[in-house]
Image (tube, rainbow, N blue to C red; front, side, top):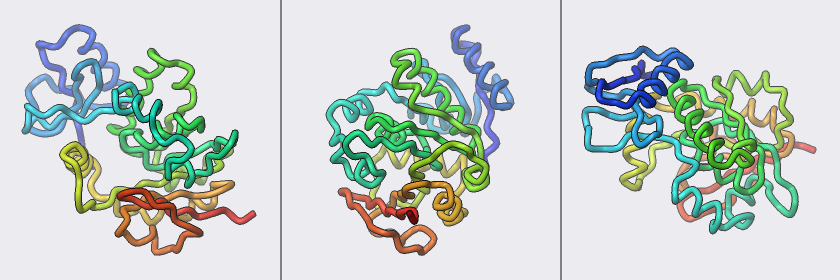
Length: 252
């Protein structure tokens, strides 16, 4: 796990400095004022981000539920016909409550919430949790009703799932996997995530507590060439262009 600092630059506005100071206090990050050599938390264009200062021309990694691509997918995506919707069990007026135990930057959580699901995001990395928290705060300013569909819990999913009292219909898992073909954006994000978090060595340990918790099903997103999580054959698999969603139905 990468020990990360909050970088507050002298040239930043008072609003940005205050925001970063609040983040540092909330998440117990140390604050630095000298230009970092590697990863640090900063603010870019009003968004909390993790930036690699060894590559200063590149934008940092951030959560944005208000971006053009997110809103386009919400308005024009496949809706209930999307493979993820079929996998998670969205049909008719049924919109399950979903625990996303590996939320990353929240893209799939956003899609599930757009389909009408209530989504609990559980993230163990304080840095990623801070990015998600910032994304939700900005979403709440623009669309408070939609933001109410999300809840963020900071904690280790393997341990916290056992203690969760919420009624969870479905658990969604998308553990990090070494992808063969990636876009430049995903490459950048994966590189930052791997520097921050290391490899997802304990991902197999997510399946059992997820199956114990989920009332209806567990859905695992995998690259199309990957083995099933923990070597456990799913009840069924739903395929998309590059991935498949392995579905483990809960016993009735």
